[in-house]
Amino acid sequence: MQSLANITPLKPAARAGSIQINGVGQVFRTTGADVVALADVSMDIKPGRFVVLVGPSGCGKSTLLMMLAGLRQPTSGSILINGAPIGEPDPNRVGVVFQEASLFPWLTAEENVEFPLALRGVPKAERRGKAEEMLKLVGLEGFGKRHPHELSGGMKQRVSIARGLVQDPPVLLMDEPFAALDEQTRMTMGDELLRIWAATGKTVVFVTHSLTEAVYLADEVAVMSARPGRIVDHLQVQLARPRTYEMLSGDAFGTLRERIWRHIRKSA
Amino acid sequence: MAGRLGLILSRFAIIIAIFALWEFLSRTGLVNPRLLPSASDTLSTLGDLLQRASVRNDLMVTATEVAVAFAIAVPFGCLIGYLIAEYRYFADVVKPLLFFAFSIPKSIFLPMFILVFGVGFAEKVGFGFFSTIFIVIMSTTTAVESVRVEYLTVARSYGATPSQTAFRVYLPSMLPVLLEALRISMIFNLTGVMLAEMYASRDGIGHQIATWGENFQMKQLLAGVVMIAAIAILFNELIRSVETRCSHWRT
Image (cartoon, rainbow over all chains, first blue to last red; front, side, top):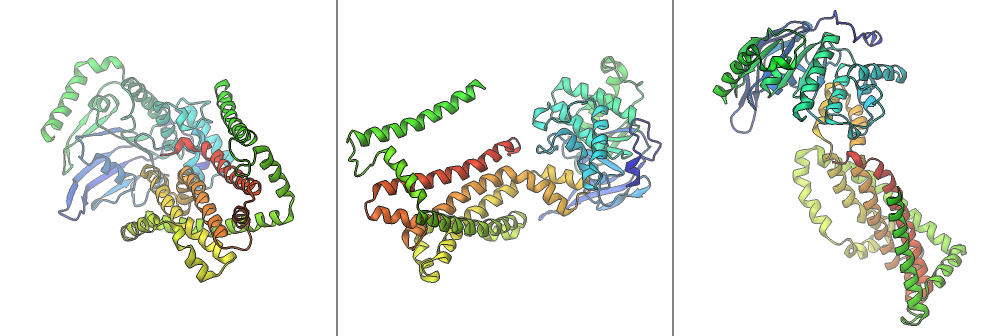
């Protein structure tokens, strides 16, 4: 509770945002044979890094993200965030941005952003102030009173990001947040996300299908194989920041993109 | 806005036209006025009837029966509907049976209600309840199932307690479907109570309408029909006006 009073999202967070994934596995028990969704995944993510998980459909990247969010328990191995195990969903440590249409249509944009605070009984005035601050951060100042159906796809995902950040968690998890957007909006949202990330200093774990998006956004990319999902490559993206549209056609970009594609083609 | 006004005016014009046709057929004698008293006569009879203490009393009796039957059937049906939607095994067992029950015309059970409860308040409320409960159960199940899994995941990931999930996610998410369910349930409920009153009863507006019909009092009969129609439409529109406000999150 006390941490809510002094949220300063516009300054780089000095707080921890480290993630340790140690030999994590996930087995789905079905009526027939057990399905191994993830096998022995390990990763060490430093605070403030932008990490992208890519891989073919069904490689378990979303499953891994759900485990990081505490929404699903690993069947083996352990996950530490801020050095402590993540058992239940803990909004103080982790904010989640979901695939499209996860906003509540019966709430306005600002009420959606306030939702996590409302759950913990934060007083209305304080909530409203926080929501306004977050909407401003994501570039939606003045749109607080609109309902989701009055917003474009990109704007909705901005609201989702604001909701994910409103409790100032050191870690932001994003599950294919821009998958439903058109190409132009997707590029713009990528730039916007990088701006917000730079302003807040969060650790971001971002799941996507798009190789271009992966290389464009990431500090590091973890490439996963199809079932059973495991990390087959972990590459550092050394491109300068801020990233620019021109980089997309550069050699460095192409080499990285191709390296990821080779892995994915092999396992698909 | 002009388009919307135009629509309303057109609807109004149709209603006026129906009444005008009614008046015309009766006045010119194209339809025997003893079978079809004119619209103006019917409406003035309606005015007279509403002045009568006995008619007001009948209306009160019916309103009480309808309200009580509805007040029992809705929470009870909602609870069963919720259990069916939430518990897979229960649903697998009960759902086909519900469809069986729903398909039977409820009116054929009315004589049994009369035998069990006798002619009176309990019989009418009981039959009203019986006519309503199945549709409430089925619509509640639909309403619960209309809640998107994504919303529940969001609530969980932000640490919502079960009661917060119920009131902040389930309830608002279900609201559009639930309101429609209420509206349709009321139609079933009114039908049930009216039927019970017309079939065997000593009071209530349904009983009055049946009596007027048997005595060939066409003016009173038609006035009663107009009265019940107006009340039913009013209730329906009341709920519908709330419904349209939340229609944009209907799934």
